[in-house]
Length: 316
Image (cartoon, rainbow, N blue to C red; front, side, top):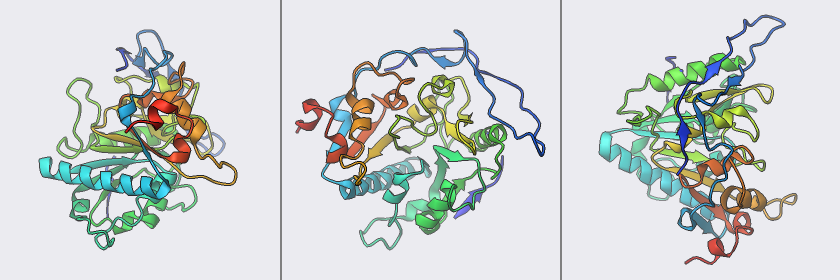
């Protein structure tokens, strides 16, 4: 596995996103994520507070169980990779942390399922979001978890990693610079906005509706297509970086996956998926995942889909 070390529908109102100056870091003064200063003419989504229509029925795939969801996600990764490599010789993939990492386990040249994994040597992998920690932190670093679960077996994959500090503003700027340094045959850009076009982006949804590290009621959700690709989020300690919602929506193909049950949640992610997919009167600010309606394919098990309603559950 190679690691990259070089260093940064909805309607939008074009403009500028301004950030407060970065503060110095000292023994008693850790850098915090600067506030996102918003105005009617800034680079914010005019629809961040607007109700979003329910997800089109054809964008929702309901499968029997978590194993079926994992199989589907792995197949989608291989198909997207083979298509991208055939078209331009490269495959750009973005992944989150959480349960989706486990769905990628077993994808190797000897996975026993007859998959051709030769595309891994032509793949560039980035993170949808990541905590600002050392990349070897096995407890907190998504990159360390990905390496241990599957990435070490993806021969030749170029992983775009963070610098491994707890300086949120600097990490966000550095990660965006690393993405922008990739040539366009590796990471294409949209002609109209200049945003990155990942061949495939995998996304998870939290119970509160967060996607990446975009949480309800926060200004980061409202950053528009002319704002930064990568944002600093200082909601928790350590801070995190996250792709913006427009960057997520610019992917050539994006998949939101949800599955699994537990003693605490016997119906899995059903309430979260109801709000994310089919609930009326939801906005990206109240439940950020709704910002992906109309842009993503939603794949979930029957438990997660149980509250979506007949239109989704009774389709052929």
